[in-house]
Length: 147
Image 1: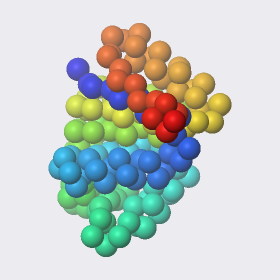
Image 2: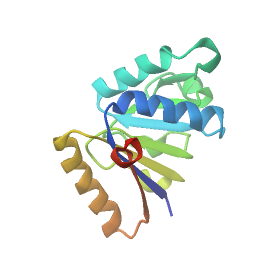
Image 3: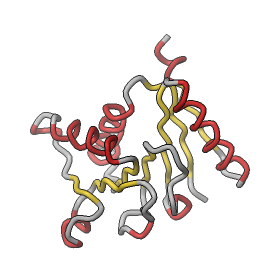
């Protein structure tokens, strides 16, 4: 069963996702798919390019050439597409407002929620979706860890 981490009350989802992806790839050697709306993926893409040359993480879009997707440790995928159709199945990072299509085929899902009221409300509905299906959710409240 997919392990689900719920990271919430974050002031900057894109920069947090960038740090999370860097750690997952560099430290743990995971292959990661990041799903979200196009604007959010643009922000993550830009943040990944701003890492120092020593910390750079190769990444591509989900619609890149198949040989590029196969070799990239990080794939940025527009939400609504079946991320599980991609070759990577280790870690899925959700930055979008909906439950990612095919999330249950990944070993781990990290759902990221900002500290904005609308995003928190939408995040609660995703939490209920996972909980109603019997998934155990590991919460990480960044408002508490910051104080």
